[in-house]
Image (cartoon, rainbow, N blue to C red; front, side):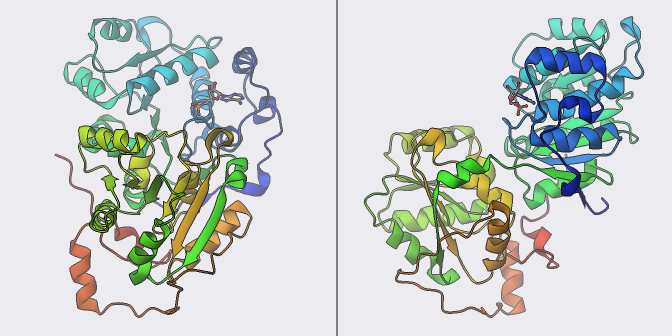
Length: 436
Ligand code: AMP
C-alpha cells in the first residue's frame, strides 16, 4: 500500500448541510425523510472522498454515523449507472461481522436508497438460506453479508463477486477478533482487482493496518473519536513510572478501596495474561479477556466482572470493544497506547451516561511521546499524579542488548513499545498467519 494520505482537516466543515456534499436529489430527499439535518463528522469527511472514487481507511466506531458515511456515496455512485430486473449484478458488497450489524446496514441502504431504484439485500448465517437465495436470484445491486454465509453461497454458485465495483469491510478489528481473518482473505480472492475499497475499524493495531494494506490502494484516512464531552467529564491522571515498576505501582493503586472494579488495558494479549497472573499472585482477583480466549471464557470473565466477583478485568483494545458496563468507574492504562484515538476509546468505557469516571495511566519514559500525541488530540494536559512511591527515575532507559531483543521478539506480543516511525514498530504484533 502506498503511504496513507491524511485528509486535509482544514477543508472539512461539519456544519454545512448534506447538499453541500454534492449529494443527488433522490438521496437528499431520503436523508431528509430520515430526519438528518447535518452530516456527522465521519460523513462530512468520508462522503467527498468516496464520491471521488478514492479508497478509504476509516477509524470510527458504531454510533458515529459511519454506515451512512459509506452507504450514501455508494448509492450515489451506483445510481449513475443502473441496470434493472434480473440483469442486476452485485456491484457493491459490504461485509460485516455480525448478523445484527448486517441487518442494520441493509436497513440503512434501503432507507437512504429508497428513491434511487437500487436494490439491496442481506445474507447471514443461522437461518434457512432459501429466502436469501430467492432474493439473490431476482437480482440485487448491493449485497450486505456476514463472511460465513457469503462464502457458503459463493461455493454453492448462488453468488459471483466478479462485478463488484465497491467493496466495504466493516468493523475489521472485530472481524479479526471473531476469527474471520481466513474467511475475509478467501472473500478478497473472489473480488475483482479493479475496485474501490472502503475499510472501517474502531481501532488500528498493527495487524489491522497490515490487513488494510492488502485491500486498499492509495487510501485516504479518516479518523473520528467519541465526542470530546466524554473526555471532559472523566477524571484523568498520569503516573510517570519506570517500566520495571509498573506492576508494583499498579498493585499500590489498587490498594485504594474506592476502586471496587477496574478495567485495565494492555497493548497485547500476552501482556493481558501477564498482568492478570501478577495481580492474582498479589491476591487481587483478576481475569484477562482477549481474542485468544474462547467465547465462553470471555463471557464468563465478563459476567464475573459485572457481578464484581472479579475485581479487575485486563483487556486488549479489541476484546474490550464488546464490553458495555454501565457503572464502570475506573479505567487503568497499563501501557500508553501508541495511537492517540485508542486512548479516547479506552477512557470512554467509563463515565458513561453522565456517571462518574476516572482514567489512570502508567507512562514510562519511552511512552512519553505517545502521551504528547494524546494531549494534542484531546487538547488538554492530563494532570500528573506527583505523589506516588515509584516515581520515574530512568528518563533514558538503556535498550536491551540485541540478543535479548531477538529472544523477546519470538514470544508473541512480548515486546517493548517503539516510538512511531521506528523500523520495527509495525512488527510488534508478529506476522499474521497465512490463509488456509
Ligand atoms: P451508525 O454509526 O452508522 O451505526 O449510526 C448511528 C445512528 O446515527 C443511527 O441510528 C443513524 O440512523 C444515526 N445517524 C446517522 N447519520 C446521522 C445524521 N447525519 N444525523 C442524525 N442521525 C444520524
